[in-house]
Image (cartoon, rainbow, N blue to C red):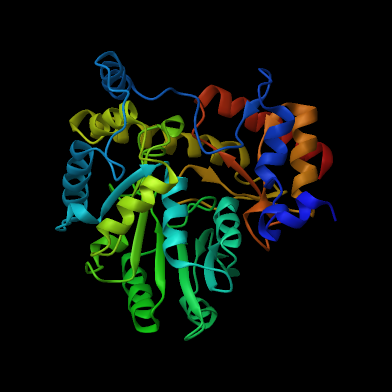
Length: 392
C-alpha cells in the first residue's frame, strides 16, 4: 500500500464510475452520437429564464449572496410550494445550497454517519447510494416490482427492511428515475406514519415532481408532513424547467435548524451561484408554469414514440412510466447491460444507460431518456431496435 493509499478513506478509494459514466466517457463529445444516456433533453433552457440570468449578469450580480439562498428566491419558492401543495411553509425551513445533488449531500450529512443503516427504494439513480456509502452507511435495497405493465412498491417488504432501532433513514424518489413509478398519496401517508413511529428520517427526492403524465404534480411528503416530522424534501429546477446545467436545487428541512443549515451551506458551497438564482426566480413565475406544461407535453409525446418503436417487440418488455422522462425496458436474453450499452454505442452511435447501475436485479434492463427532440429520439430508437434484432 502506498503512502497516499494509506491516507485515503476506504469509501473514497473504492469509488468507481457509475454505469452511466462508463458509457458516457466513451462517447461524450462525439457529434454523431444520439445521447439518450443522461437525464436531460437537447433543448436549451427556455428564454424567459435565460433572460433573467443574463440581465442579472449585466447588472453585476456576481457577488456572494446569502448561503441559504437569495431572499427573493426563497420567498418565491415558499409561494410556489404553498400554492402547489396547499400548505403553509415557514421559509426558515427552505435552503438553496447549490445543485439538487448538493442538497442531497446536505440531507445525508445531516443524518447519516459511519455504521448507520439506510433503506433505498430501487431502481434508483446510482449517485444516491454513492453519497450514502461515502458517509459510511450500510445500504439495503427494496426493489419495485413490475406487475400488469407498471411498476409497484410492496410496502410490506419496505416495512420488513426498516429495522426497528437500527435503520436511520429511508430514501424514496417519486416520480422515480429510472422507472417512472409514482408513490400514491395513500402510500405516502403510510410510509410517513411508519417512519414517524420508528424514528426514521425520510429523504424524499421529489426532483421530478412536475414531470407527471396525469395531473399537475406528484403526491408529496410535504402535503402530509408536519413541520417537526422526520422528512427532508429534496428538489430542484433541473427537470421541470430544463435547467440541468444551472446546478440549482433546494431542500425543505424539519423546523428548528436554520442556523445549522446556514452554517452548513457556508461550509459546503458558500451558497448557490448568484446570477443563476435570478433564473430560478423567473422559473417560479407565470412564464415558468407555461414552460412546465409545454415540456410535460413534449415528454408525453416522447414516450408515445418509445411505445411505437419498442412496444410489442418480442425481445423488449416495456413498462409505462407514470412520471419522469425515462423508459426502463427489460431486454429478453440480456445478462450484461454494460456490455450491451457499450456495443450499442460503438455500432449504432446511440448512448443509453446500463440497467445494472440502478441497483440489484436490473442487469437485463437499459434506461433511455425520451426528453430528446422527437426526430432524434425516433432515429435513436430505430437504431436500437436494429441492434436488438441483430444481437439478441
